[in-house]
Figure 1: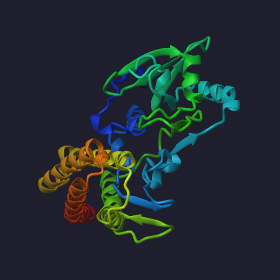
Figure 2: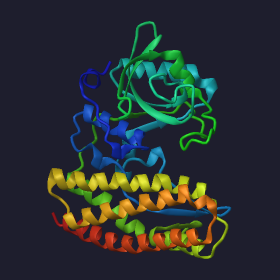
Figure 3: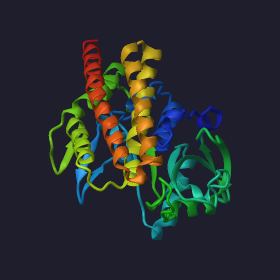
Figure 4: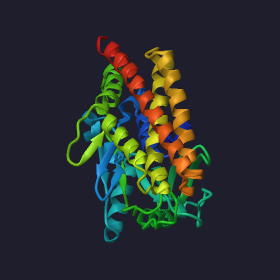
Length: 334
């Protein structure tokens, strides 16, 4: 058992809503004594639009959740159901050696959640102990709604890990769990906070200007393409627009949390940038609500409103990028 995980108070900030994998990474790094764990995450906000049977927003994978220089510090495994016993054995050996693991589950099988036997969705928890008979494992799941820590039936967890996670309309359903699990190195986290902060800011700024490549548009070009598609009045699946932008807007909220974190903890930042980003995020959320609640009416007047708001958002984005570029430049000189 990892005694540090057992004794520590794991955290879950609401900014990590939809990013429970990243939150699990942070909590494990905290248990290793890494105080600036959040700065190792890949928090850069880059809109990536892939042209493949239309245009679709592409999001970061779990493998990409860390900054590139530190991705080798994390091992992620996916397996077929036929290898379940092998995965279980390997995981239990690691946990008994004191190594906490991130495991992916279908919340349909987690009895402490409101989704138990009601709806499917991928979700991550930290496994850090197993009883002698291997009938129960101990997990911590610090999602702010239920904040669970305790033993849970081992067979039930295996069902959750082998689930097909059938699509039932939920945002987190529809992708098989594949017995996914991850472990993190306990050392090799020696980055200077200034370098880590600069890298996250710079990824957001540089990603805004990436030219088109491999049938993908990035940043500024991607924003402009979406605006053009809306202006052209092409048929729009508003629910698809909502689901694809959902994670992107949540990533913006996580980046704002990061900006507030480095400002309050290290006095790195600018209150004007924070306020501008805060206001911009509020507008993004308002735009998203319009898409969800009213967009399905396919009303021409409403389409104009959606496009008008989007145009305003991308104009604000340029101002935000300019501010972040100046901030990144000042950090680089430290």
